[in-house]
Length: 297
Image (cartoon, rainbow, N blue to C red; front, top):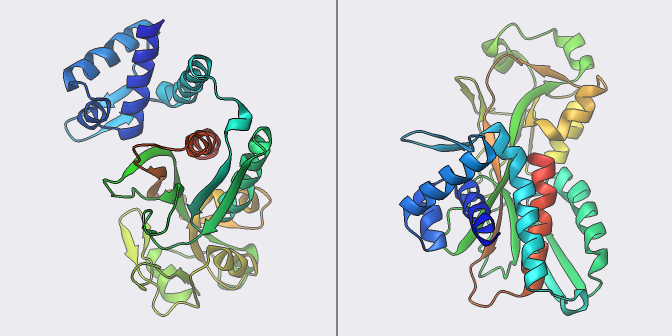
């Protein structure tokens, strides 16, 4: 049983880092042992867990489905071996995340429901689209799209998002369907987001096309404002798919150029590396990982 749990722990670490050497470094074992352990687990399951090349490591479809189950099993084993009474988990957990409605609403609701078993944990829920210094900002747990490159952090990939181009049926009735990319950027009112870290306009990316709306019809630092403008039929927007999926399903928005590849934005959960981490922080981190994997994984 111990060996099986060890294999699962190694698998989850590789799945988190998507890098065998980095996983070995984090676990304090040799890369060869990591490779052997993954091979042993694959043989036991009868499934391939990783697609490996000289440049990258990717989870297989089976591994993406298997990962949440493995994480729950490890968490259950840890709780069984080192039981922690709910009343012992107390204090404040400070969470930083971008101003993104799905995180603000759905994820927060699920987290609060799960924390009902831990009445002495309080949340400080802070939204900020700019990169936050976790030490100076005194952050316990953070969520962001794009890899936070900081050696002081424990980072866990929990899914991905993609940007799509959308417009309302009313706007398309007025302007017609764009014939091509050049037609879109030259003739249609576009909205744009401000990069909070440098004040520049975020670039649109779709397939091989790149464009920075200048001047945009609407320039904002708030993605909810972009969504409101496109729903009102006033702009075309380049925004996350999951944000507009309900409106696409109801026919309130239309996706443009669906045949072109979309840029993927990985979603990461992170927390500072600490010698003595409060148990409440680890519990909230694990709960958020489970929720986000179910939403974005």
